Image 1 (tube, helix red, strand yellow):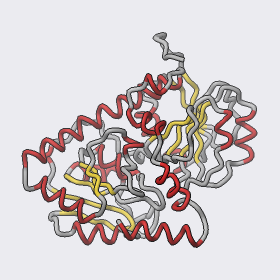
Image 2 (image 1 turned 120 degrees about the vertical axis):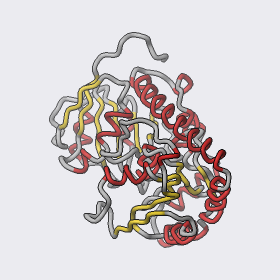
Image 3 (image 1 turned 90 degrees about the vertical axis):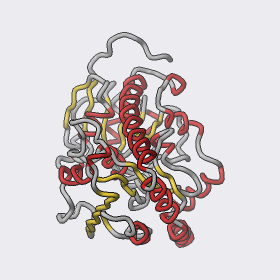
Length: 339
């Protein structure tokens, strides 16, 4: 089916998420970026599953292996519904109910998920990071790199390797949603002063909110490859990030750019321009998908890459990395040590 040229009617988007952080955390990203081109009415049902959802988009969040029974019953009585599923960082969620949805948008790419109507979105950013001012010029940046978060896994190596670059800013926390964390508006201001944003893996997955939060501040994201591939091409398409096999090689590429101010300026401008197009294309594609467009008609290269999938050997590694049991835990530890 092709996207039509008629003016779209207002879509009902029902948030079946608990009041507070579960609803508020990504609301700005979903409303002001993902659904920016889609006329919609947002209804917040506080996970009560009471608002009729026929032909509506239902937003829910779950990291659990099985969706709540009440939600499944709600979806079963809602013909024509579409889904926005946030969460599932461990890639262990039972997504058999996706088959009944018209369209599914989810966070965290899983190459084992190959249904044509399922599309993976970036994690996005926490509400409060949206840049409503405009592009941040390189001349406004007086910090080489910054990092705020927990110092775990290969992040210790990251901080040790990158500490040779100064000035920098490191703010450590001890837990997710730490009360000592830097507030979103203050962190956004810090990114606006920073050239590079190292973006280590999240708790289990290579994607993190840090990527788009730093892009909003005009930073150049620095990421590692994952299980032998550039994971982020499946999330951001043909992107201009620094993608390295290790933090040592990432530091070498950063050093090369810092030694060539003109090339650094060109890279930072290229990232800013690419990001503006990425958000615009994403919003238009989400609108068109909800109207019936197919992948071949879309602007966003990440959706094409998702459909093509990863190499079979990488998919097998996913079963190990995201599985359970002692062998899988050893594999995860080994994969992180290599980075």
